Image (cartoon, rainbow, N blue to C red; front, side, top):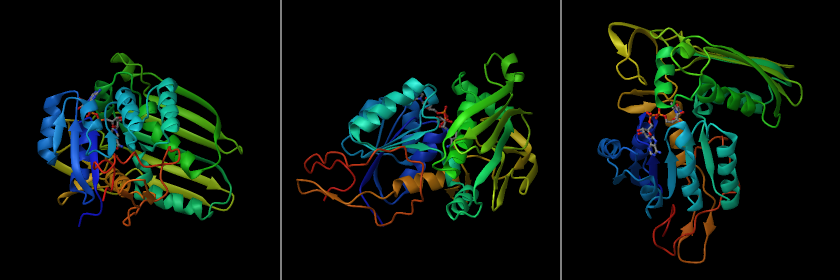
Length: 366
Ligand SMILES: NC(=O)c1ccc[n+]([C@@H]2O[C@H](COP(=O)([O-])OP(=O)(O)OC[C@H]3O[C@@H](n4cnc5c(N)ncnc54)[C@H](O)[C@@H]3O)[C@@H](O)[C@H]2O)c1
């Protein structure tokens, strides 16, 4: 049953934009879907696959479309800023893929506009929607670890995926693109306790030989305001046919009253196939042995998409909206079907966009 009148624009019709658009298209609250890509053929192909109402080679056109009430920005890392600014200025909530940008200048520009417009912006830190990490956060909320004095998170992946990321943006690095999830996770677990210092060291190898600046291995130690020390580490330089299809990670938290160890390496679900297992992120790449469940976004299974990116997209589409009336006959109402947990919102106080005097803009115009 349709729950609401949501119109979504997905900007960027690549791997992740395709997942977001297909999830939005299947969601009962979504009544209108538009997609754009700087390559109009990609926008058209995705519109056909997802059954979108509108497609365009112009981001501006779909973001400004009167039936679009919220925007998902799934462009590459250095192409996030303009669509976010346009959507916020039009009063439309935004979900943007991580990382928000590659420079503090871009991030500050976005945050300044967010605050000026009193808009809503969420960064797609989909690790928070992986069930093991949601369960971990609940233990932190219940205080079962006492005072956290330290911990670690490390993540490994094959160079096959790293080279696919570098093809998209040669300035991407495993730290900017992936370790950022674990910086976010640790800050979420230690909410209210800010990091105050970071020391890090990395080693160059195969990526440098291939002409990129990315390091093969990076280790960092973060010190938080209360003295907690957290070790973060990443290598995306494992051999190309290593069985990880995304992220093999391990997260540990050490507290005065408890210890939590999250084994997320995915060694517990092996698949070996002489026919080969296609890599979900890297076209034309296959492995013989796979750690199933290690694809960061999640997996298609039995006709639907399951996992962190599915949970995150659905939660964002269903997020509560404040009940609000405005001067004309339209009526803002909160969604009764919210299942949103505490989430990574970089928000100012949300207020609905101007209703357009009953022209159909916004979530719920009655
Ligand atoms: N949460 C997750 O699980 C997850 C996983 C992988 C990537 N990501 C993030 O998603 C984002 C996109 O990654 P991807 O793997 O989908 O990349 P991709 O290369 O598969 O897709 C990017 C698409 O954006 C288009 N594009 C480029 N510049 C554009 C512009 N200015 N306007 C409109 N379209 C433009 C490209 O033509 C391409 O179709 C990145 O920020 C990445 O870090 C998130």
